[in-house]
Length: 462
Ligand SMILES: [Zn+2]
Image 1: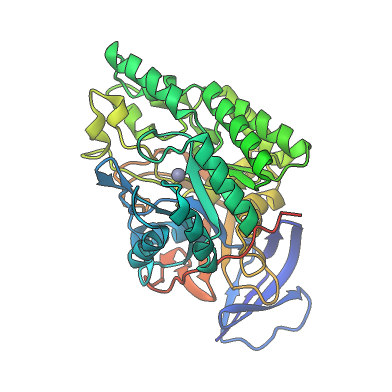
Image 2 (image 1 turned 180 degrees about the vertical axis):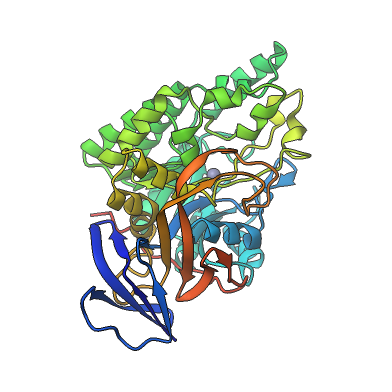
């Protein structure tokens, strides 16, 4: 099966190109000059007036994730379908080690959830909750199984929290094995004291989730993680960076030449503490950690994206329904499940940044597709439109308009964090390994098409 996409503007991290794309089976066969003779093809897609992009890669999602006695509301099936609707063709989700269990058994468990159920390709990171001799050894087996990034937490004491000593041991192990450590950098020990004080004083509304997790405690933890990584000589990737304090620490480390990288998420670029303060418990819709920040942090994050101190935008997609799930925390904000939906809207929200003049068109593709692929060992199979790469392609109409709403989104969650927001730009067609998942605005995919991706090394390390 050969598909020919013609008359579009190919956008890559390097620039834009008036070019045609020939797909043969699951791979891109050629990127052809606009004036070259049209090759024989079974199917022709006219992309006049549209962008032709490498499919989005969201390296931070949580499908069916256990949290506080409930599960995030998207399965791998519904979550990957929603991702495809929004122009994302690869996710990297987190397998979550429960304390006292093995990493390899955890990996099996996540394969059982995902395998045969995904619309698009997927990989895993491993969350290490227990650092001991056995799990340190198992990290090598995870790497051999295609999982070479390990996430640790300086937050959530008693759940995922790791001590500085445990973090150092895991970083030393990761460094010797060529793996990257990903860090949730918030000082959970101090935060828990502030949370207990707020609850004791009767300050129980959702906004207190933000007020008890001040940006200084993200900045402090980020600096500490960077220091530990320096001592261990380990590559470090800060997840969901939300605060200018943390960004300053990352920028300084990068300026010094250390292998430190960071991502932010659309919610930190567009939403703020004011959303957490919405009345009548509506703020619960916006509870995630780190919390939404005062709006003045947003400009720093956009600047960080331009200067490459922030290399990636992922979603931290972790949806909990308002009814029955978020409501678990009525009267006690600390019991609100942490997480927000977003996997469907990342490409659109970043394109909105292009429309607003905050990002260039190539940078949009770079932070949403190309860099994630290189950072997590998927390049050049993913993240680029070039001969030999997987035919994961998005045809995007930059002039179409849409309104984000729970009434029209495809995520399995009963609210939108961006309800009513007007967006310029819309996905038209999405191909995953040459096969349509979205065709001309209609669903054409199949759960089970998505394949597990064994990932290689972080390609930014020297
Ligand atoms: Zn997360």
